[in-house]
Length: 160
Image (cartoon, rainbow, N blue to C red; front, side):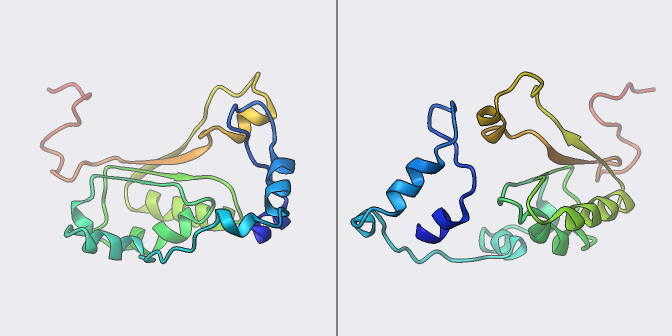
C-alpha cells in the first residue's frame, strides 16, 4: 500500500468525479493500515500456462481480452508468435511503458492476417476523472480470414 501511494499515480474516486490520490495517501499513511491489509498467495501464470491449467488449448481460443495495466503486450507477445494462436478477436490496453511492445505486437498480428485498430470512446467533453475511469483506447485485432477457410464467409458478408 505504501509503495503504491509513493507512486502518486491518479486514482479514481468511486463516484468518478475526481482524483482521490489524497484519500489514498491518507489511508496509506494511517498507522493502522496493516489492520486493513491481508497477505494472499496468488499463483502467477503465463497466458499459455493459464489456458493449459483450464484444460484448454491455445488453438481453441476464440477471443482474448487482456487488461493488465500496461503489461498486456508482454502477456500477448509470446503467444502471438505461435502458429496455433489464432483467436478471431484480440483486445489489449494501450498505455503504460509498453508502447514499443504494442507496436511490435501490432506488426506481428498484421503479418499473421489480422486487421488492427484502436477502440476509442466518446471523450470529447469528458472530465479528467471520467477519462481516468474509461476503457477507451484499447487496441483491437480481428482476424481477416476465419479459421474455417475461405469457403465460408464471415456472417456479415454477403454470400454469392
